[in-house]
Length: 116
Image (cartoon, rainbow, N blue to C red; front, side):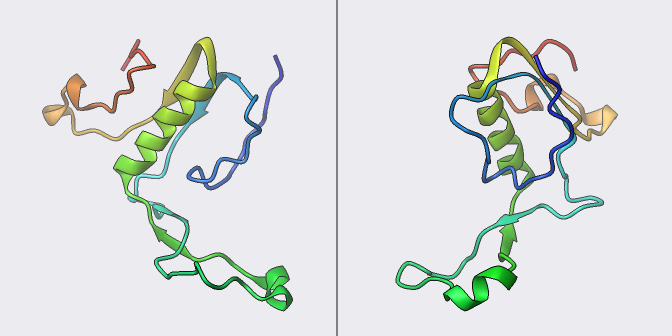
């Protein structure tokens, strides 16, 4: 196994080859408390146009809202697809202790909760 280092990217647009697998994914997704929860995208219809060639080098993509529910769903789907058998997904999620119930944690049929 190799150590992949720290990677910062737009999780809604994975940058991995189809055959990449991980032994472990450790992450602290944005929750919208200290950092914004946005993703690269647009609410505009670009189906009949594209960014002109002369603007591509200096173009900054637009961002749209990315809900915590969508972030966690994408994380679980990605992890179920990319973790090797027996691999681990480790992530932090904010809770209110007095209101916490394990069944409120996001779930995926291809993953099993071991610790919380």
